[in-house]
Amino acid sequence: HVQLVESGGGSVQAGGSLRLSCAASRYMYDNGCMGWFRQAPGKEREGVATIDTDGSTRYADSVKGRFTLSKDNAKNTLYLQMNSLKPEDTAMYYCAADSSPFVCDVMRTATIATASVMLNYWGQGTQVTVS
Image (tube, rainbow, N blue to C red; front, side, top):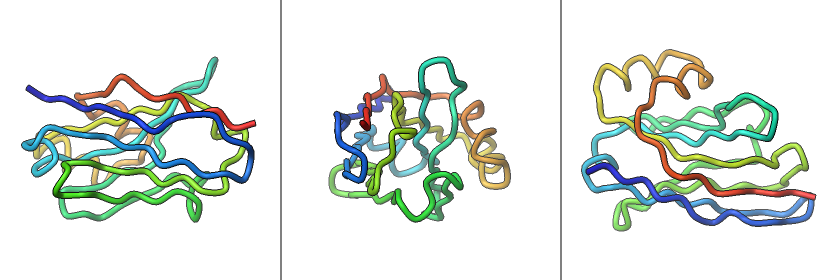
């Protein structure tokens, strides 16, 4: 049973920080490629950051230098540290993952936007509001 549970969202002022957490099942955490995506009202879902099975990371241009992925192996948890937050970062943030080698291979070379339609397992989302 695949489970992804996000937490850590909230409301902050511009320039502030938040850390999002995505707790995954052990199998998915150990074998899957994972990522964070976001969707603002009236906008399409967009990729934020992804991490491959070998630990390599990619970030959307809009968040490079401000957001950082990290993992806690003891807790099966993927984190998204978000600094210097801007009002345009306001969105529902989703954690997604997949353990299919095919999916992870495609995600490795595809754009982050493509990753959002490749990954098959999604969490319920956590709201981030920046004012």
